[in-house]
Length: 166
Image (cartoon, rainbow, N blue to C red):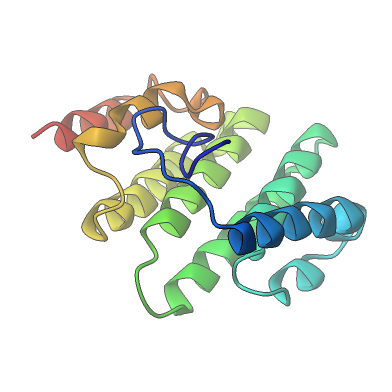
């Protein structure tokens, strides 16, 4: 059985999902598949979904926009997601991490705004660190996440990654 964290962090403690969690996760995946096309064309549709679905469907949207070279739409989607995260109460560490990854995907499409985007990546990662989502145990995540290839060699990113080890 696949455990919690298996897809995002190889160092995560593996726990079993309950039957209800498995059902919910499978239902969410089916819903994402059924609505992926609509999400790529309609930002408002993405933002109007249940909060647990917004990060996943936003990732599909930004990846699709990047493959279609719709750079401005991808940037505005990342901005909108970041604003959404800031408006939400509670621990948003994982969502800030995801927002940073969305900006990194945008850099991969067009590095003409490299400094601005890297700044947005680091701002979101700093918030994820403050929320105790990013710490030294997540260095592997930063080193292995393919979304971050475009920013990994930037000095600000390297400096941030080093700060996690301290």
